[in-house]
Length: 579
Image (tube, rainbow, N blue to C red; front, side, top):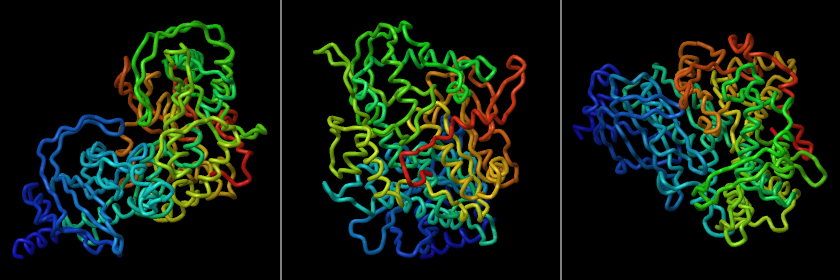
């Protein structure tokens, strides 16, 4: 009792806490006393679940979204439950900086794929800036289990608590608990400002939007390549397979790789600078004809490779030949995006410089031929989330373009309020002063870059309906900015365009915007690999596009209506608006 009272008194005084050492505060007694037991109605924090450990001189390697750093931290894990639910437990993990390094900041982090967290791999990105960093397991049983591990209670039965936790509940609960825990741990007075942030990419980007669209929990958020518009996005992974099926043509991967390399080489200089990076995929769409690849020779050595989680490793023989007219027709069909049987546009697609990850084929050594390999992501969505069966065996036999459209519609209706995550009215978040930095690799091969453009445009049209396009864009850019990253793939630099930049310090830019009022115009980025590693870039805020003039000597961000128009897809297969 005396120790607990001492711990509470330390937490009540910011001056004392900041003077304390990590060893003083990183104890089970101190952490237990700082738990925000009344943070949320209907939730019980289990005080006996607390696990605490201190780490000194931790060296964090650089990631795509933060630089390398060395710091001390206190790792805390705790559990809470929802009152009235049976066998319910949610785990939270927090890394807290040493008291003298705390900068009155809190950061929530998210996951990727079907995971709601990235383990502890994203946590350094907050601690290095003096923030408490948090991650949640969503209540799925551990930090190693994903949503698709917990989604079905049994074949045909959705675990709705798991679904809603993944959809938006878990992150809101973590933010509320994490913010109050941070205040208690560091003895912050009610009058002191705690700056609160979020940073994640892909599924983590969708998780970020699930909060921005509902709450005002954060002062700022970095959302990368969000996998929102779930019903469309997940079925879209099957479009490349459908295009191959329609053409009855299953190319060796090397043929599509050759088409890609030729596209990159041809479109690289269109931005005014020849550097191995396609910075203007819109100009590529306007001025490059894929037919030029027909007849070009290709060769790839034999190798063993593996794909996404749901695919198995496979060996491929050496591949050689010439690019065929059918190979180019397939590439065009993929880039043109999903259509129904009447030729109406169902969904958008990748930019011409994105790799063909969804167009996977498997080599059959018995027939010496290439065969369809159904996208694991798309297949998992149909089997588990639409058919509600625990299976990984989707076949496209008998499937048509209209089947894909029907799958989208089914998922759209079923999960609109949970996983679609495209609500365009951000009045609550904006009204509280929240800022957003939205980044997306222009050559993303998993979540099309046009998906992010469409959402930004949806927010603009809904929130500023009476303003002209440029006036609405200017208003939106005062608090929500979208940056397309030249050459970048999915949440990382591209392996095909190695001289491309990546905005590794975006959180620092956001912190300066929120705390100092330093509104970013361009976004700083750095080449993280290849022969030009370390080179500095500036990224343009949408709808401006990059252009180099004077033989590549002068860089500017320009307004180009013809280019902007290539990003605006008319999804005329739907009567409902697709935000």
